[in-house]
Length: 107
Image (cartoon, rainbow, N blue to C red):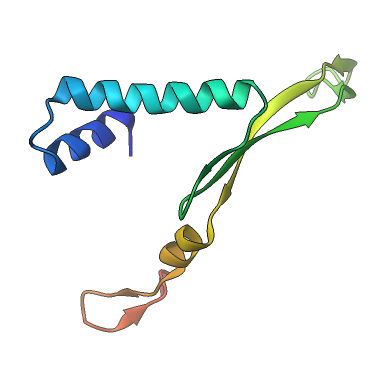
């Protein structure tokens, strides 16, 4: 799902809001989450999951093309851990078109 698909879906589910309002809401939500993560805070959406920032220490890396050793600077990376409810919904068996249960795997 893309950001525009999310906005379209929310606008469809909430006809009392204009698309501009929905765009502003989505942008504000993402901006606030980004600002909190940039401050090193944890963002938790109950039933969905939690976003955190993990720090990666500086290290010696290797250029795969030349084999030359290069220094990789310390950096922060976003990390997402799915919540219990999301994991359960994703792993829930889905009914196949023929009416039989299908665990999501192809036969």
